Length: 281
Image 1 (cartoon, rainbow, N blue to C red):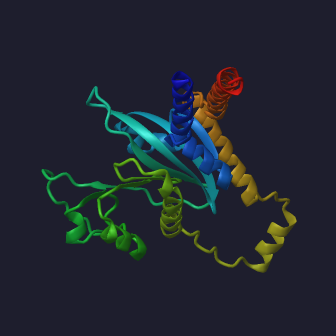
Image 2 (cartoon, rainbow, N blue to C red):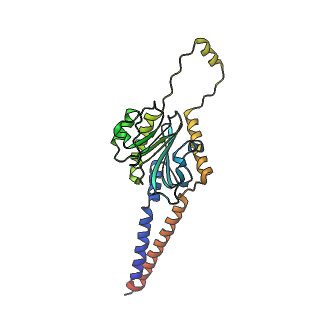
Image 3 (cartoon, rainbow, N blue to C red):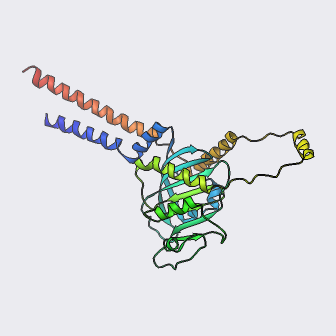
């Protein structure tokens, strides 16, 4: 009898533990908000943007627990990253990185990273003395941050990493963010992208002769939906070409199925024991 209870208790604890793993919680969140969950990819950026990224060249990255969603004008990915720096054989602690690729518009590239204590203070025109003591900025001398971003930098408790390529956004806080922060980070990234993306400059009005020539020319403008589809295909291609993305949904269902079967077997064993030793008495 004791062994039956012990077996059933171990099964129940195993099911609860698996249901509360980071992967299981992210999968539930993805289903709830209709996001996409992938267990592992080699990179979270398309190949073209990764080649232009300082972040991608810092060492060997291994991205896992990736949640992807679509916001206005961008595809965003929330993922955990295990980095082995190029000058080290040991991996850094796992941290969460948020990346986005634009479907319209572009960024002015820059790299903003925390300043190490031994590094000299570099006074970039875009940063105040207070911020220059916390961050190193690699950007053209005429670069300026929007006021919203400066306010965000001043309000940040810990310095973070922020990089823009012409069409990609990379952000992380050097820590593993809890699953409960996914929706908060989504709002934060959306706000940053909205103020950092470069708005297209309006073209001067064309003369009547030019307008007539343009009207007579057959055109097939690409809609926003087509642009988004192109970026999505590129992201999917990056996941497969950088390293065969494996969906964790199937394996998770198999594990849950096995534990459920074991739980049912434990209940049947308990019922059989009760019938044999209690009912007849």
